[in-house]
Amino acid sequence: MAIIELNNISKQYRNADTNAVDGVSFSLEKGEILALVGESGSGKTTLLRLIAGLEHPNSGTIELDGDVIVSGRKSVPTNKRKTGMVFQDYALFPHLTIFENVAFGLKGLSKKETEQRVHETIQLTGLKEDVKKYPHQLSGGQQQRVALARALAPRPELLLMDEPFSNLDTILRDQVREEVRQIIKAMGITAILVTHDTKDAFSTADKIAVMLNGKLLQLDTPDSLYNNPNSSYVAELFGKSNNVVATVAPGGFKTPFGFVRGPKDCPLSINRDKVNLFFRAEETDFCNAEEPHLCGMVEQCMYLGDHMQLKVCCNRCNKCANDCKGELLDETQSILLKSSVQTWKPGDIVRFKLKNFKVKETDSE
Ligand SMILES: Nc1ncnc2c1ncn2[C@@H]1O[C@H](COP(=O)(O)OP(=O)(O)OP(=O)(O)O)[C@@H](O)[C@H]1O
Image (cartoon, rainbow, N blue to C red; front, side, top):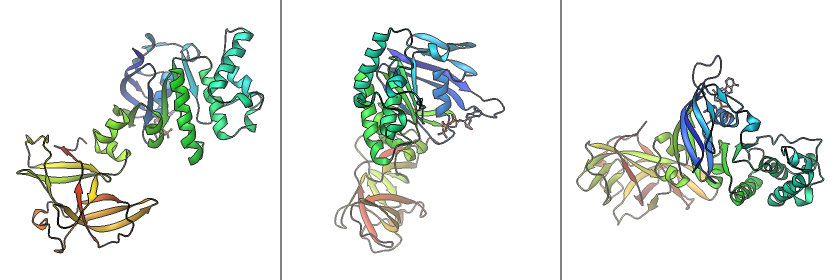
């Protein structure tokens, strides 16, 4: 059953020319974690605030746990929505202890019930030793957990988190992401987190929604978004990708880098001469001149720690046995390859094959 359902939600701020959120619809099942990703100004925070009740949309409806909470002028107040919120700066009360911070949102419970609920939540979030401390006595990661515990203590149906990891350093961030996911999953709560960091999204969420200019471009599992992006914008957001223009030929495709044999399940009912071959930098293998291969020339090398990223242009010299010279469609095309060997230099000839690629009739943008 859907816990949250948005239908055609739009929001235009006063004096703005365009919608900050533009016709967004999606639903989430109980227990799912969704990450909203997108560049700055794409509308992520506005969407979260609309769900929380901190903003009201110009149009559209929102249902939470089967109840309509937003429709026309109807807007269930924030404190009556079964949502919990974790803010980017945690927004803890500095003069209250951790216990008091976590207890803050608990209304209508007896003293005993409050104590029990706070202790249960604190236990889950691993803060048992810290209940009597004040926020400034805790590390960033611990404060993050207090903010999470405070949002979770009232047992919301939906947890909303705005850039929850952005104040943490890289090492702590990896650890806290994992902890947060485990806590949310252990409680079976549905959650939406806003982030501009795709690593946050990949490591924490079950589904990812990509936003641009207020619109939802694609909502899918991390795997589908990575392997089947519906636009070059989404593809680029999740890692370096290549989109090579190719000519359809018997048995495959002619590209500026050589001939690519068509996969068995390739949609060769393609009704046009030119297509795009989409593949990621890591979906290639280097090979030698004796086996069928594509080739190009290294134009630029970039050291990236454990690997090197090569910018490869089409090979305009005659050193390679692979006859790609006759098939040049667009000599200006270049691709990115990833190599664990770090000895490449500009001008080197690269021979490679595609382990995997997708044929796209047109780029959907
Ligand atoms: N209170 C406001 N009044 C007017 N315009 C606003 C307001 N809040 C946001 N906007 C505008 O709405 C658009 C979406 O902003 P929003 O903060 O939702 O994007 P975002 O994706 O969360 O960005 P960021 O990652 O930088 O936080 C932007 O153009 C922003 O300038």
